[in-house]
Image (cartoon, rainbow over all chains, first blue to last red; front, side, top):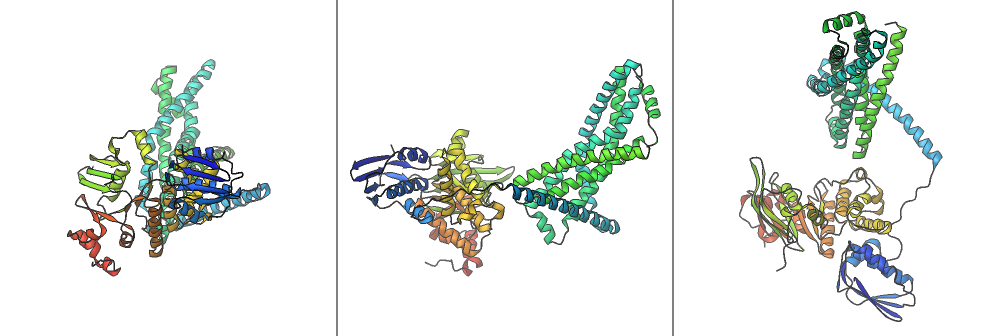
Length: 369
Length: 255
C-alpha cells in the first residue's frame, strides 16, 4: 500500500507510505483518483514514511490541488518534502495545467499553398544547384588546378571497381533470362539463330547500360547522398566553406566526374558478360557452338549497336550523381532528414535514368540508328 | 558506513596492445558529486562506458548499487540502466524528436503512464532543468549549446534516477552558462539526494560542484576529497590544479 486515509469529518489525514516513485506513479494515481474530497475542510498530509522522487511529488501536488479545489485546507504534519518544494518552484504552486498539448487546426488551403510554394522553391534550388555545378565544371575545364585527381580516382574506385562483381552477375543473369525466353518462342518457328540477335541487340543497346545504371543508382546514388548528408550534419560542409573551399568543387564535381568515368566502363563489362552469358545458354539450350554464336553476334551487331548503348552511360552517370549529391547537400538538422533525402535521391536517380532512356529511344529512332 | 553506489575494483581495459586501465579502482559514495579528471586519452570515456555497462572490461568488477554489472545478463542490465541517467559529451539528443519527445522516450520504453502523466512529467523535467516551456516543442537542431546540455540533463532525469553520469556537462559553454549549469546541478543534487559522477575539464566547475575528485594517472585512479587532491604530490595533479590556468582563476586554495 502506498498511502493510508483516516477520515474524521471534516478532517482527512493522508499518510504517505513506501515508494512514491516514477515506477509507482500510475498505480498510485489510479487508486487516488477514486478518493473524494467532498465535505473535507482540512487535509493533513504526513510524508515522513514515504520516499518521494520528482514524479511522486508531481502526483502529490496533483492530489493537493484537487483537495484545494474541493475547498479543503492543506496542512503538512512533517516538513514539506524537498522534491515537492522543487516541483512547486518549477511549475508554480498555483493551479493550472503544467502542460497543454498544442492543437493544430486543419487548414487545407494553407497546406496546399505551402506545398505548391515548397515544390516551386525545390525546383528552383535544384536548378540553381545544377547551374552552379555546371558553371564550376566549366571553370574547372579551363583551370586544371581545380581538378582533384585523387578524389576522382577514389570515386572511380568506389563506384566502379567495387561494383564490378554485382554488375557482372546481374548482366549474366539478365542475358540468361532473355536467351531462355527468346529460345522458347523462336524455337516454335525454327528461328533459333535469332536468339543471338535478341541477346546481342537487347544487351548492347538497352539492357546492359540500363541495368548497370539502376544498380549504380542504388549503390552510389545513395552513398553520395549519405556521405554528403552526414558531412552537412557534422558541419563539415560549413567548415569547408569557412576555409574558403567550395563544397561543390571538392564534394560534388569529383563525384560527377568519377561516376561519369566509371559507369561507361561498367557498361562495357556488363555488355561483355551479357554476350558471354548468351553464348553459354545457347550452347546448353540450343546446341549452338561458340563459333556459330560469335559469328552470328558479328552479323547482328550494326555499326552503331554498341555505341548507342555506351553513349547513354555518361548521361545516366551525371543524372545519378546529380540526384545523389544534390539531395545530400539538402540535408539539414536531423538523422530523419538524412534517411528521407537518401531515399529521394535513389528514387529520383532511377526515375531520371529510365526517363532519359525513353527519350534516347525516341531520339535514336528519329535519327535512324 | 553506507554501501557505496559505485564500487569498481581492478578494472583492466585494453585495446589490442594498448592498455588504458590497469587495475583501476573507483568508489563513489551515495550523495556525493564525484569528479573524474585526467589528460586527454587517459581513458575517462572508456571508464564511463565500463561503469555504464556499455563495455565489458577485460578484468575487474563493477558494482552498482551492490550488483556486479560485469556478470549481469541482458534483462538484469536493462533493469539496472533504468536506475541511472546519462548525458553525453555532445548531448546525443535524438535529432528527429523534439525535446519533449526525447524526455518521453525512456518513459515510454520503461513505464506505463497515461498520456496526461506522460506529458506533464516530461514537461516537469524540461522546466526543472531551467528550459523555457517553448523549448519543449523544439528540435535539437534549433537549440543553442547551453540548451542542448540542459535538454540532455532533462532526458537523463526522465526516470528519476538516483545516480547521474555526466560527460563534460559544461564543455563548450560560456563561463556564465557553465556557472548556471553547475548551480542547477548542485541544487538538483541537494533536493533530490542524487549521486553524481561527472567527467570534466572545467576547473571552475570542479571547485563549484565536486566533493571528491578522482584523477586517472598512469592507468589507475587517485581519488580524494577536493581539499586533499590538490595537495597530491604527483606532478600531473600539481600541474592540473596549480598551473597557470588554475592560478589565473584564483581557485588555488591555500588553506
